[in-house]
Image (cartoon, rainbow, N blue to C red; front, side, top):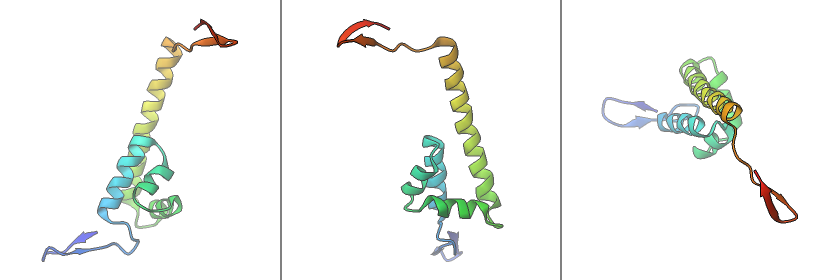
Length: 100
């Protein structure tokens, strides 16, 4: 979306408004899922990939990469935490609790 001095709004030719891009990236950051992020803005994942890969999509591509790096960092931290501290899983045998 482009703001015009008279206060009106014009949509991008690609159909992705500034708000749609922002919500897509926020949802991607929260979920790590392109499918969920695209669904949040009423688009298909293929549309998001096309926008990212378009010659004029450098800013969106950079924001996407930054978001994915943040998601990857959260996954790494979670994996390391579980590797070192583990987590308890209750174990049952024939419906009876037998330990963790």
